[in-house]
Length: 229
Image 1 (cartoon, rainbow, N blue to C red):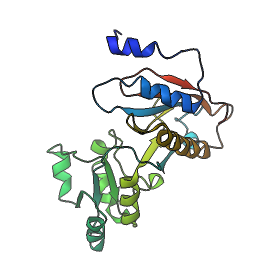
Image 2: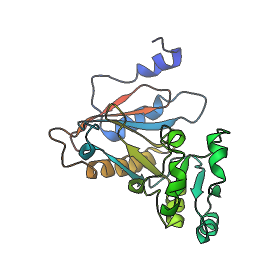
Image 3: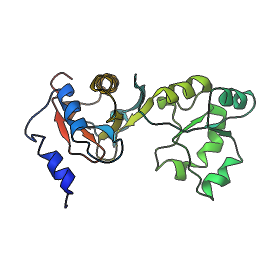
């Protein structure tokens, strides 16, 4: 794969053989974020889990203390009093059955997170084929299927992110923007890693965290020492 000139220059700053301390890795990821936009700083965690087994699945959510730097649009599926509650809490869109054709037929996906009250999951379930592959399906483990829609919306707007294993047993998560201070990114990184270490399935034998890499959207990966985890 041919890399651009900026990427090649940025990659020279990273020693691929070195396992960096988290703070140094964050500083390097920021330094190598040379795109014209405010790049996202991402963490990629290779685990020793085998996601094909239900008891080795890792999935959850964590509120990053300094947010993600992104304005998140929230869609809430609710009815009755919960509609007003969701609107009062700052949901961007609230609705029920009437949203199904809009999403299914018109391809409307102008939202980042979907929250649903448990009594609406029958309706939301009909959207499984659309929302599932995009990782937008509400889930009790992530706190997005709940009667407490106010708390769910507040957490999401404050910087709550979901994490889960992909098909290759890697977790990908954002910890902020390149414009954040090193300290804010470090706090977010610590919160994410703390949650993932805590979420270790008891069925996993051997090394749980195989490797951790920090990178900006367009930049090279910086390997992080996993010793302390």
